[in-house]
Length: 135
Image (cartoon, rainbow, N blue to C red; front, side, top):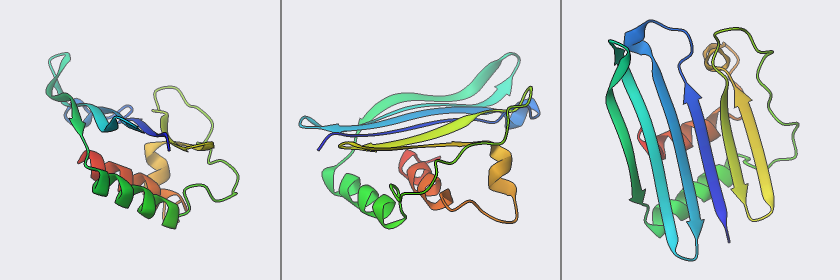
C-alpha cells in the first residue's frame, strides 16, 4: 500500500546557535522504503555548519513497526485536524503529514505548542517520526 510521511520543522526566531531546519520524507512503494532527510543546524556566519542531506533505505520491518506505532497512537482517528495557533511574524510554522493508502492527516504546529503544560494528543505521532529520522 502506498505510504508517505512528511515532516517540515524549523526553529523559528531563536539565537543562531539554536536555529535548525528539518525536512524529512518517508516514502514507501513497491520498490521499497526510502527516507530522505535534510537537516541543518548550528547557524553561524550566515550559514549552517552541520547538515545532513541524504536518502537512506529503511528496512521493511522498521517501516511496519513505525506504522503499527503510529496507528496505535491514533494516526487517523476521526478528530478535527490539528491547527497551529494563528500565525505571528517570525514564528515558525511546522507540519507533519501522514498518508497511508487513501487515509491522510496533516498536523500543523508551532514549537511553542510542544512546550505547554498540557501536551497535544498528537505529540506521540511527532515523537515517533522524529525518532525514525534520528532528530
